[in-house]
Image (cartoon, rainbow, N blue to C red):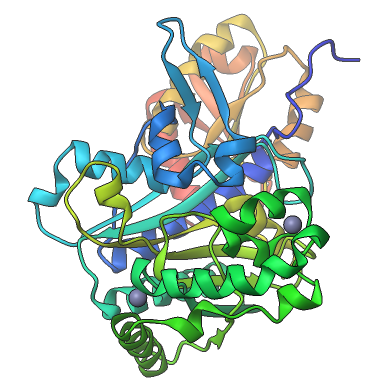
Length: 422
Ligand SMILES: [Zn+2]
Ligand SMILES: [Zn+2]
């Protein structure tokens, strides 16, 4: 019947569902704060170059999925497709590197990618994430991973597997890339079009190509983890050691590579089985080259991002619900125009002291209003009819005992508080 529709791949989050979102957002704030991470809010759009440079212009995100447009000043603007590039841009622009390091930051908000919508994947989607910038200490990697693990369990997702890998650094990656190209070139013609152009530019991506990942030759590719330089190997061993100390279980997945160019060393994903094919609910890793490539000093960083939509699907699959019923404590029923003048004051006075109160605004009769009070599970009803207006006294009814008393207008709030607290 409607003439207007939301754009494909977007969602209207109605009030009941919004309660779940509020719950997740509150848990992010609460849990992340205990690790001394502080929130950063960056613009939803940035200059396109921030993502071309920060995400990598060979990635699918930049090549195929960004919402990019010229603004009225002919600047190329892009709706952020992920959170890290903007946070690092802000870290550099606002000179946070001059403050205490590492900067431990988190964010929460909408992201935009032009993808085919499916369960848990929308074009406007939402992510929470952290970025820790300014330390290469493997304890930071372990803290970030343990924070993710703690958060997922605290929020109610208990059935995840942590997959861990090291994707090396520019030094060890050269050796690995050479080995990979040599291994894959003989089967170049059997790969998809994307992978044929990736084979020299970005052969790592072939390992997680949806079309070619299961080609037997691709499956037997040499792994970066077997080509780590001494520094990366020691770092990876230390991270695993700390995770063992923290009793965070993980499996090493040598096939875990990152779609984003700037990742180095530690890479990890929390995989959840209950929501089908789109099962990664949180992914992250170290990005020691990113700050410098966005014009900042050569400082290392690590972070993760998780999708709220997928998290909510996982919560539903785990039977976790944080919806609360649509309720009020007090329902005020005014039955004439004169009564409305008294009711607006009572409503205001109740709300000022923190009592959840509402009234009818559609001119319905007493019976219909009583029904609404019932549906909203009100504990107290205030009735203001002709007699009440004349006497200046209000009828206050305890809806659990059905006991009703007349109260002077000035005493109403105190009386109602008594009933609510009894
Ligand atoms: Zn290395
Ligand atoms: Zn492919």
